[in-house]
Image (tube, rainbow, N blue to C red; front, side, top):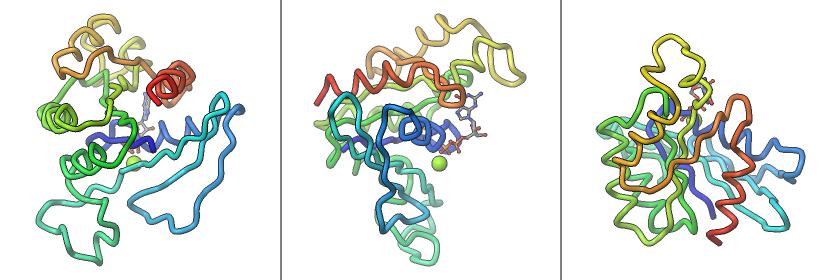
Length: 178
Ligand code: GDP
Ligand code: MG
């Protein structure tokens, strides 16, 4: 099981769509999908991965309110991280490379470092760093990636979930950890 974790808007769902949308991947939506958590089967070079998008963020004061959060995996990003760290075989911590590491990213990284599961750091929106899109880039991609080492997760994997670059290398790295 591969859990995709990260604060809202970093591109988790876009990444999942990219991973399951590849021609090489065989995908099947599972029954029981909730709006907060989607589970997908992905086959990559002969390995079967169950990819979970832990996307549904709910404000902490509404946790336990089943009208908001029907799924126990929904919750604060930190709670997602705790659960992912306990149950996943590999965790993908997705951050926005154009924004750089935020306090929330650091908090989640701290949790994941405590867990048993290996964590890969996904530096998504690499295209936005390189392209000079408004609001994003303050610098080049190599500098943006170097700054992400401060999260203590190791090498960042540059990806553009939007354009598809880097997703094959990322899947190779995931499979290497299994
Ligand atoms: P989530 O909340 O983490 O699931 O993030 P989403 O997948 O919903 O994406 C949030 C926003 O970021 C959307 O507007 C996406 O189109 C955009 N986005 C996602 N991935 C990329 C990327 O690789 N590059 C750029 N430029 N935008 C992206
Ligand atoms: Mg999402």
